[in-house]
Length: 242
Image (cartoon, rainbow, N blue to C red):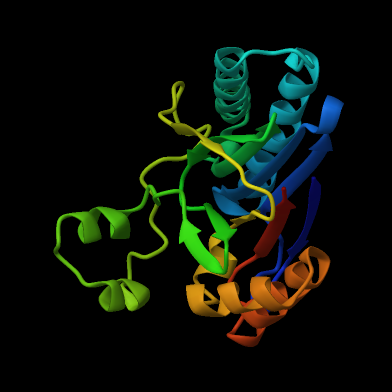
């Protein structure tokens, strides 16, 4: 297994409120994590950094080489819940941080399976046998409109509410997350990214890059393409090779 990643400020923003974490665990297991903070410059930075730190600490503390599948799922869920509590409590203690939060998309890789937790509009894709598939579903205002058939996919790309998310880690005392498990095949690639990439680079272009480049080259090229299209947001890309 190989995990590589990079974050970039983009071409417009003054600060980078994205964060990512790559963590090697025992017997080939690993953690990949991407966060996109919100709540003003200091709030977004604080929320994404707290999520990254807390999730990594919980996983390092609780991970064991001989865990069962249910124990891994519980660990992943509790890592996100602990991050949610830490961010929420920090916001209550500091008035200028109130309302801060962050997206989270994380993958715990263990025994040829990916244990996925997801909140917000950062995404997880799988690239398998030349095909790219989005595995997470955005928790966003636009996705709700799409689900109800009120707008088309083309209209969603330019809708003024495209950056409004409906779930975030740390905004409330509790958080609802999507959790699922999938089996990985040899040669699979997982792509975790913030909306700086997904809004700035089409699925077709992402698939082309993953098809033609190594993992390390793909990270660099995807960030370059997102910046080339305007770099309107911070851009974070993490690629996992099974």
